[in-house]
Amino acid sequence: MASRVIPVDPFVLVIFGGTGDLARRKILPALFRRFCDGQMEDNSAIIGAARSDLDTAAYRQMVREAIVEFGQEGGSCEAGTMEAFLETVHYVSIDARGETGWSELAGLLDKLPGEERVRAFYFSVGPSLFGDLAERLHCHGMAGSEARIVVEKPFGHDLGTAKALNKTLAQHFDESQIYRIDHYLGKETVQNLMAIRFANMLFEPLWNAQYIDHIQITVAETVGVAGREDYYDHAGAMRDMVQNHIMQLLCLIAMEPPAKFEPDAVRDEKLKVIRALEDVPAKDIVRGQYLESDDGSKPGFREHVQNPESTTESFIALKLHISNWRWAGTPFYLRTGKRLKSRTSEIAVVFKDAPHSIFGAEAGRHCNILTIVLQPNEGIELGVTIKEPGPGGMRLVDVPLDMTFSEALGPEAEFVPDAYERLIMDVIRGNQTLFMRGDEVEAAWAWTDPIIAEWGAREDTPVAYDSGSSGPVEALALMHRDGRRWREIRK
Image (tube, rainbow, N blue to C red):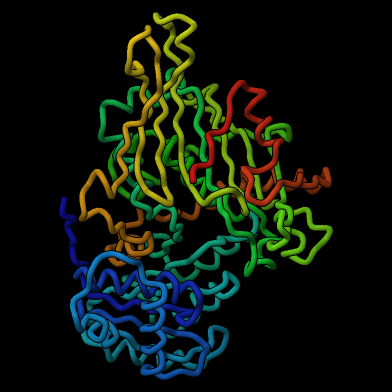
């Protein structure tokens, strides 16, 4: 099955923080892949902007090295494509909080041919610089009605800072110009979740509390917090993962069908889910911190953050409910953590047992499970119950109907584009469907803040769990007391 590439209009993308880790690892390799596939035309331009004292030639060399080191395997590029791509790359040394380099940036934008080209500004910097960048773009005449800004998480540290950030950006840009990026929403399988629900008569009539027993969302990581120690000890898993990534997955799995597949229609329905979330009691939350590995080769969380008294969680599991007609009584179990047994992200929709089994108690209990695997091997799996082959009675067994994309869709699907590739192209198209709106962000914080505040009031301390495990045993008990169990974290 050949994929169809639709070129975007010529554009200029300015990457503030263009020498930083995110630009090198994700943004620049993503742009190169889109250039290789013919989606980005060679009359577009990329401008790196950072404090580093470089010229364009030196920056192009840095871009070349980043693409070689971090570019995705798979796909193909014709000979000479790298050189053609680098010709689109420019650099300006700039001070986000001063005046150095801003006139040069404005002048370069004016010199580039094509007055009607989309101008996008990617804020690949810390949130503390967002306001300064927005203000200077406005003051130097670069924040016109066709301009777009892309901002990375964290979108604030709590509700108050999120509101302040939204207010600052709104002083210089309309909401329709602001793209709050969450790379999870750019994953192929996440978008396929909407297709499964709303394009198949098979599932949508069953997508409710009458037929679904519960839903599990798991985001497990094998890495610790090395390299992000200062940030993570102030954020924790709740702020870093649940409030944004997992919240967005929850919204997509639980939202009502939008009237149309349009940005605001989709985001309106997601917002309704967040506002319908019930408060979560302390008994339905488990927080954990990983210990040093058994062989001593990997330090524990407190050693990593160099804070022996840290009460920040590297793991969290919680049960929540959504107060609406579709989901009344159906629990959602969420968990995420560092230093777990494997790196995997999945959503499991567990359907209820058949109301009556004609096969007797000896056949055991069986149920259908729809599993959406987000990483590492993107795909969809539906568990169905069949008769076990062979003589000797009616023995039932659960088997998967597996649609791993690389196998089901043929060689053309073996190379799944990185999420950043899709999302950056959506910015250029002006499509905000996969980006968070300001009121979404604030609603998520409004639900999250009271939970975090209660931990502080109780002086709550996370429980310990072994590195390379599935998390704290207390998280298992969270499910067991309901007569359920977590799905095994897949390798």
